[in-house]
Length: 329
Ligand SMILES: NC(=O)c1ccc[n+]([C@@H]2O[C@H](COP(=O)([O-])OP(=O)(O)OC[C@H]3O[C@@H](n4cnc5c(N)ncnc54)[C@H](O)[C@@H]3O)[C@@H](O)[C@H]2O)c1
Image 1 (cartoon, rainbow, N blue to C red):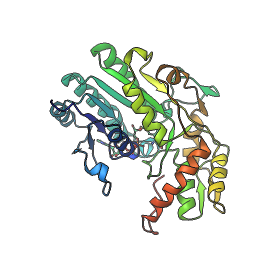
Image 2: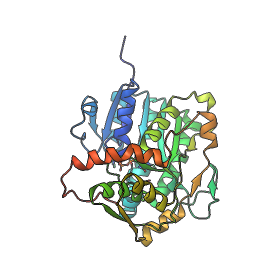
Image 3: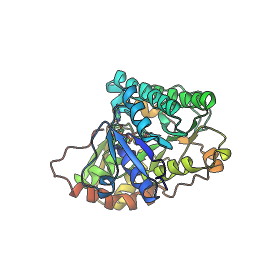
Image 4: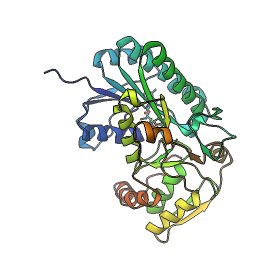
């Protein structure tokens, strides 16, 4: 019997990509990885996955790889996130907007049945209700948010015009025991990371900052559950998903419960605080829970208990001189 067509993951070397690859392998899905960056060292699961260097801004390269692999599904993750995106909005446009167009075009040209897209709470802008439903006016304030709105709309267009099965989630800020990719929700992970490494951390936000967060195992399981859900059950292309929405000082207390003696201070950075203030405080994900039974397993304290030993392992596997991670969605 011929091998089943693989699943292709773009942006595979990133914070979500690496965990998604391990999750897909764990579910027995044949997977192929692509990223601008090489395969990360030292993980036997990742070592066994075919790895392609791919720049999604190059349309020919994207079409060639997709034509050669003929995947049954593409998880399109490659992106530049919010904080880095504001340092170079032009590159962010090329990667997020043109890159997504190139991937959708490759799906159309080579008849890829499904494309799964990772959107973000950064699609929202100021003036939101306390709990934000799927359908509100989208007025993002960052290039990252603007390009993700465009990606959601482009995908819906390819679904309607060309019959592509386009699905996506709007991830909250994601937390895992890996160094994040330059987003604005990174203050939450730094409380754990620098708490273990240095015993203190100064957060770049106010203590009352509240945004939706999610632990990575729930995020990747949710993304794959959405990809595998019967299309007939889905009433939308892109879904809000939510887990918990703690204030920054509540995260600090949860960290201090697990790591007594850690000191966490708050010195808001005006630019990043303005982005955080423009995002939802909480999301309504009723449609995801109804249509494809999305159910996160971790609340804040359950995440802390699971994460702290993993951050300890991450920190102790590194040099004590290792720099603080770059300041996710
Ligand atoms: N991490 C979060 O908190 C979060 C929240 C909301 C949404 N998301 C979305 O999830 C996806 C993955 O995010 P992440 O946290 O893993 O980000 P990340 O920055 O860790 O990874 C992004 C990956 O994209 C790759 N990439 C960048 N430019 C590329 C190009 N031109 N061609 C090919 N690859 C390129 C990078 O090398 C990197 O490995 C993104 O689409 C992001 O918008 C993440």
